[in-house]
Length: 533
Image (tube, rainbow, N blue to C red; front, top):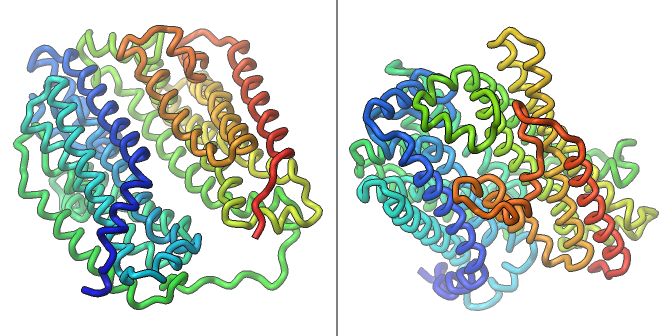
């Protein structure tokens, strides 16, 4: 037990550091779940409406792959939360992964864990503390989510089953992150490996759900996300399934502790791949280096966006059956479109995907801050690379990358949708609808650049801005917020295509705002110091 000495102190330290971040993220998940439930509860007033909509979902393979199966087609709660069951659980898993890596591999990589370890702190204490904080955080998230769903009008028992299902997925992937933190030597690689495992789990669940009653349906039981769905909130509430992720956590977390004792401090169990003795011509400048550092992340995002586009294009052709009641049609039109129902659905989904493109842009620009704090920027700037050139190298990847992601989803959605309709014009309409949302992502990138140049510690405010704009621009109509408040979001100024009226003026305005923010950030960066070793 001496190896766990100091665990309590590290738990208190982690809670002190994460008190604001955890509160914000819990609030986001609760608002997202309760808002979705509150907006949907009144749409299906009769059992016939619910059965019709649920049957349409279950009969659309792409929807089943994306969201899962509704086992009780008459259940209002199951229909209301179908979009957030698997997808929301995956987001909770990402939060758990980030929390565990943040307090283990990130601290070790930054050198702070070595200082902590030099005190009266056992070898296994940091990992144990990170798991305790993460488990407590996702359990709190599940509890408050359940209370929010119950307040929105759903059954209390089903709401707590849903909240615990979310928490169980996060707990399972906290253990996965604990293992990947031992395998790799960098926090970025550990997160990437854990997210890859999450992607495999999501695919296994999707294959199992779309396989019907065949042998492949057993694959859903190999996935923590599948376990969360098999709790079946609002559809019988099978509490015993929660024992599976609990057992998984105990076994995998114990494995992580064993692996921790088998590696050196600062090293990973997976061997590092030696690079070439001489750098290629592509690494001869700042832009080549930025591309080398960010290409893997961009390609991974692009692959996911292509898949999303293919799924959304297929769903759009079946949307009439999915939203068969008049009230549901009115709801989806209110969210995004002004003409055809399929255009309204596509507009809404592309708007949500644009949030993801903005998240990529923020992440790409934040690489500047990471390079600076990890003392890799100063050696680069000590050469012939100018300050503004270095910033522009990463900013260019962020700006063009956001455009490439929306191009990828537009191509995927346009190809599948036009193939269903048989009209080439639909391809260009959907592609254009995806691309008009790019300037909004540029505004988020500009915000991060401005913060990085003026107050680098505030660069993380880009994530807070993204959340605020998401709530204002996407959920504002549901909450009936004042239009002036919703106009603060750059997404509120994007033409609602396809189906709406196109105007280039708001796009130029968004681009101008992004350019102004970038200019402010560049001026600020030129005038401030860069940390040196």
